[in-house]
Length: 73
Image (cartoon, rainbow, N blue to C red; front, side):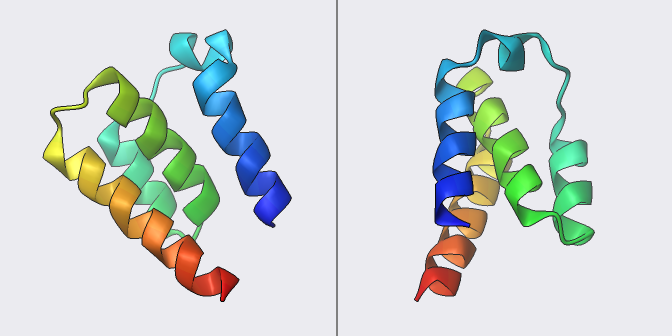
């Protein structure tokens, strides 16, 4: 799981395709409520890079990163 998370994080930072994809905070919240936490974090990270002032998005990143950190223990 950790390797997959690192690969996904790397894609967010380095994949120009992610810049062309359409994501919304609603999509991230929906993925999170459905239990797709890795996908939700992926979307939140893309959104946070596009809109670093969006506190709701930043809170989503923080919440899901903390969840992932706790699960790795």
